[in-house]
Length: 241
Image (cartoon, rainbow, N blue to C red; front, side, top):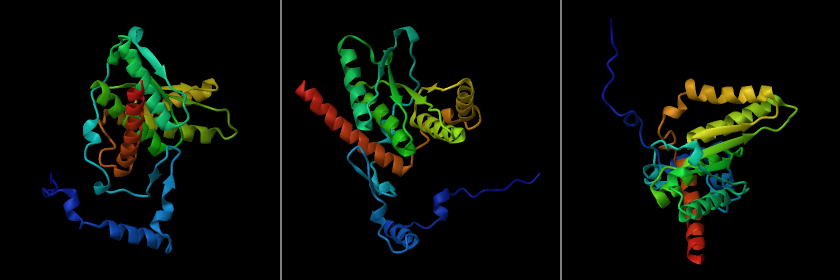
């Protein structure tokens, strides 16, 4: 039996480094002369997102701040905090403030479950969950227990609904949610939704990856922006009260 001998080299050593300027020139060429900045977009959260990020655009602390061990809870003792705020920064701030208030009343951090809705912006939702996990660990040094819920709406195009739900479920799993809950419109959509999670769990093995977005500078940059904005607002509220 013959075996392929693979040289002991790091993969990226096989490729020459590419500067940010070269990337921008390549993108501008694809845009037929338009400025790369024309792809920047303003979020509802009050900050701008660029079309691409590189390692030097982010700090190296985002992934290292994640508390990755599984959170263990007793269902009977769980204090449930649910947010229905529209803006993501408002969702994160509300959960931080209410979690802190519950602990002031004597609750333990590991007894609290946070429930978040999921939107359709994949990268934003992944970053939202990562940001909250870091923020909660910053406050308590305890991993956050997160439940995400997905609400199905009766649509003419049922397939479109399943695609949207798949994207939402993947953003929850990759973002680090502990549980996903579906609010189906009928028995059939409920069965399909459950299968979406089973496929992600048993065939894609996404639950077995500790931090699947490590090195994704786009997600890490958005996560950093959310953390900075929410922590500033949290500190302001804390000082006021």
